[in-house]
Image: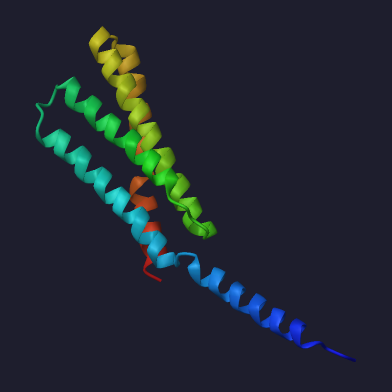
Length: 145
C-alpha cells in the first residue's frame, strides 16, 4: 500500500492541532477559581451593603438584591466544560436569582405594609438560601480534589 508523503504530513498537522485545541480549554482548577471569585465577590458586596445600612433600610436590601442579580449574570457567563462544575454553576445562579427576587418581593411587601406578602417573601428567601451551605461545601470539596 502506497502512503504519500503529503498524507503523512497532514496526519501530523491534524494531531498537533488536536493537541493544541485540547490544551487551550481551561482546566477544572481555573474554572473553579473563576466561580469561586464570583461567589466570594457576591458575598463581600452583599455584606458591605448590610454593614453600611440600618436594620430596616430597604435601600440597602435592594442594593444587596441587585448585587445578587449581578452575581447571577456573572456566574452564568463563565464558560464551564466540566459537567459537575456546570451543576454547581447552575446551583449558584439559581440561588442568587431566587435570593434577589425574594429580597425584592420582601421589600415591596414591606413598603406596602403587606404582612402576608412579607411572610411569603421571607419564606422564599429562606428557601433560596437554604442550599447555600451544602452547595458551597460540595463545590469546595470537588474543586480541592
